[in-house]
Image (tube, rainbow, N blue to C red; front, top):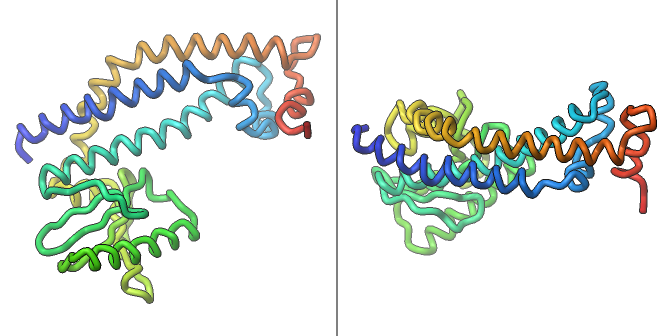
Amino acid sequence: MTASQYRRYYKYLAEHVITPFYHIRLEAIRSLKLSDILKRKNPYLFKAKNIELAGDLVKGIVDAFLSSHEETIFGNLLEGFAIYVSGNLYGGVKSELKSVDLEFARDGVYYIVGIKSGTNWGNSDQINRMRDNFKLAKKILQERGTKNKIVAVNGCIYGKDRSPLKKHVDPDKQYYKYAGQEFWHFISGDDNLYREIITPIDKEARQKDEAFKKVYAAKINEMTQEFTANFMTLDNQIDWLKLIDYVSKRD
């Protein structure tokens, strides 16, 4: 990979991954309401962790919400980067086929790629559905006139999979699973791209994180005040029964 290519990739990551990620994070934290996130989290779990401070409980709930929310957002943005890289190198395009995010041709093979964040993304039913959709995608592409051999790939942005070929009695449901370094090499032909991605992420995150931290701290303090006003006993202990009723009692 040339220095100029890396510069283009750095620019894309800064403008189309990190910048929108922090914008979405800020909007998400600003719009959070205590009433919404309390009902989405398991109060029994927080009680089992013996949380006694209102601030710790609120912070734990907010952090759990943001973590699951951000994993999805960042994965989708990096999916866009993978499509961008493939588009630059091989004319890859975003797919509209079910379970397929990217299509591109290389060396006489037509690849259909479903991109996920990590390797443990789905249960057996979800994986079987992906296999079914890969088979359907091959049929649709062949009907559209694709003559090349069609190979299905489940690409994972991070992680490892030491047995990439996922066999099946139906060959049209067979696919390869490439994760982490193997995935980024498959997309780009560059064995170091998986490491180079971190460079612009580190630089841009340092610049944007301070603004997020201020908004985050203000939201935690605001929600802690609201929680204290509504879910504390007269002797300033968390009222777990009231909290459980709020989350689970029938209307």
